[in-house]
Image 1 (spheres, helix red, strand yellow):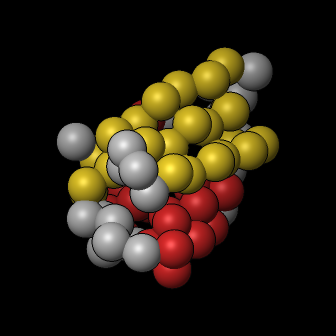
Image 2 (cartoon, helix red, strand yellow):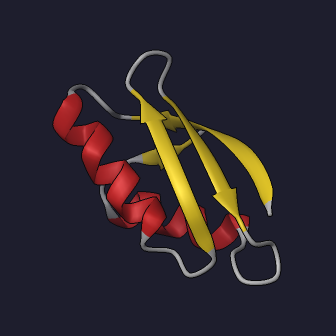
Length: 68
């Protein structure tokens, strides 16, 4: 397992935080994701053999947010 920090743009409320967290946890290979509104950051624990940064970015973008 590896841990990655992502800067997330576009979050304005706790609902946004939950949406990003749900999107990241839905990526195959992601075992955990914690998201903080301030400073707009996500910490993702994942299996690099199953999850990719591209897949995580795509999930966040499909939820309506952007990885900076």
